[in-house]
Image (cartoon, rainbow, N blue to C red; front, side, top):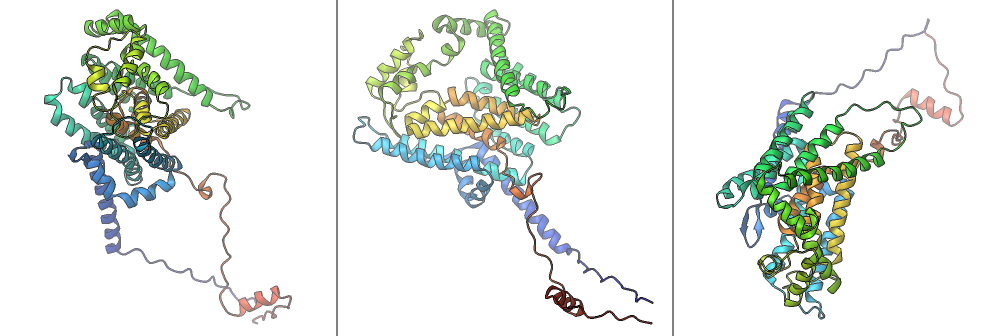
Length: 468
């Protein structure tokens, strides 16, 4: 009769004590509260003193945590490294002996600090995404900006256009994302975007009307039922299709909006402004944003850029006016003298402003940011997983890179990048990856281990004894 072999008892795992659970929950809640406060500070972006904002303080306070979060985002690390190179280039250009431009230290300090704050805010938002949901991040950032916008709206000639449009959109779309609407997600998002577009038309905000309406179209296209594919075509890449649809749809949409503006269907005031710009320059884009024609001649005159805090000379102003004249834009209205070249270079483009202040490293920084945003949003659209708020912010970011001032719009571009970047998945966690090698557990000491050792050494194991 063989002896009954009883299984060895498994080690009992004691449940975590209640005080330990409470401590962990409190730590998590405290981390979430810190992230919420940081997002509100970044969204508000209130200037405190000497160009230091609430976003600057939040980035400095959370420097260790957001620097650690950059390890999971190679694209963000490249942006930070190129920002450091751009700042160094701006200083060298300003101090270069062959540069005949005077330097205003106040403007140089403000531009450098603003750029560093925005890039640091990118890291803060990436860290906040680790502890908060995407909808909560967008909602809190928009709430901070909305509070400041409402505070300053009485003194603005057009509060919706200059202060409220984007914060209201972030709050509304962030709330929809936070609610996790399943069946009603697409209709609610489309209705919200069309309502924002209607308010923008009423308040003379043509570009934002176009972006919200285009985002609504992209959301509807993304929600369509996928067509059945044959097994031989399932592995074809969807990127060319997505790029073709976005480019063709954007072009067709811009032509449709221009026709609506010229026909007066969106209001007589918008019709008069659009007709005047088209008559002067031949197209709505050239008439609405003619600063690039001035920038083109400035790049030809001084390809390396001007440097941080460089003060425009009279020859720069004349060159810019020559560029504006090529598209029929009159430069005697004070806009060129008082805004574009009033003590510093304001070329009304994040890319052009970065080139003027930091040289070609600054331009490379903006190109890198644009490529990262475009590839991220196209990948999300190919997977049909792009939230409406990220689509809207991506469209606005691409526009701001070409036609938005650096000082006021670079923050929106960095927010779009922070919401679109994905965390790097370790090789061990990817689908189909081989599990990491692990050591076999060491057998316990005793007769069984001695027998196993003897068998490995080639010796015969001890004979089993039968119990009669």
